[in-house]
Image (cartoon, rainbow over all chains, first blue to last red; front, top):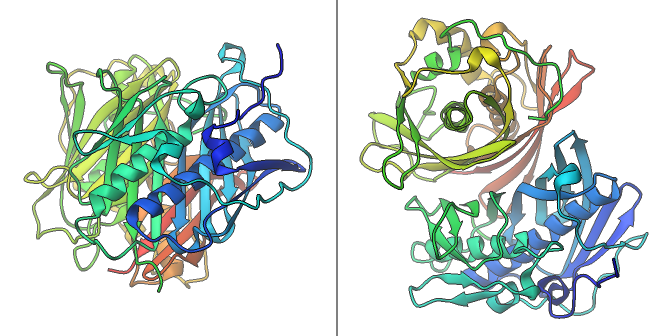
Length: 259
Length: 276
């Protein structure tokens, strides 16, 4: 197989500027968020999506470095401190346990929060991802901040007032399916939009996001929010043509952003 | 739960202390049209599911979710059964309206060769999705004694007497020093039909450990557990680390270990707490 550079130019991970390195049995990541804190619910959702994209990648690179073989993210949960989603974002992932078919990883995001990732180990049955060789040593923090717009994550406002995630090479993972991080972005943007009418001027202090990836897809995807209290919301990600859901997301808000 | 570890069939009858403790009745709703099969749980909206002040108690609520969501996944994979690998619960900020019945609707999202997932929506009969949302991811296991349950499932709440040994669990958050971890012996009433610590009760321990450390004014809004290996021996210990997350919110990381089994870690939990 010829070496194909991943992520390619224009890819969501390249636009976020995510850098990954190896620190012993851990993987580390670095990206730079805008220097000031989130200014709006949409801004907060996009920063959270950048963090979730990064932690998913760093966790799965850590698992790959451990010799686990082909694997996919099964689910992840992150608790993010909204006010800390600014400036340098440094992550470190470690394997908590690796079984025969399932692995659990912990990701430390420093002041920003913490996350856990469950990965399904595919053995000989899984697709072979494009190879990535992470340099040994801490990742170099990029000078430029991440590009944060809905388009970075392949999102486009649709006529129904929601968001559509459009597929393409820029939002694909290493096996050509929709990247988990952009699915997180669709869920987060949708969830935060649901919260906006209730508390237009107060951003939450803690933003919790849970994602369960149910099946791989080439997209496109729509988000269908539940009818719950917006403090604890479920969002189903579905293909416009119908069929079983592609992913489930739970989004929670607590507290207020410190002044 | 990991696919490894020494678990085996142990279930010898209809006894279910957790459902008895919660007053939980279960009913299966067969598929209709495009709607997949669902499992409906109903329980009195009262302690242990409610805390003082009418807030939903996340730990016992997670035990209910584990039962309803696990049953939804398990029925979809019959004649096999499931063990929970991830349990996620997000609770809304509003207090529960006075009394009534708490309804939990478990809907199947995915059933595959090795795993299944179900969503559980919780609320009142009038607003059945309004109060909390949850997800159960589970791994398929072959357990002959649990196979071929009669369908559709109809199970009234077990006799309350059966759940009485679990009553002390509600005091775990307040009964010892705040800095002490939560610790329980692995009595038979805390085990599931496979003979291991019940996944929902693991969540109760995580909830109690976080609330004990945070203090009585905080309520749990998010409880997210990943099960690593079965807790088989006991005592089981849950220790939390808490840190602030903006104004009016805390996050906690909880490590749950089986002290009697080389203190190996059996689950990890993330908890978000908020002030009412």
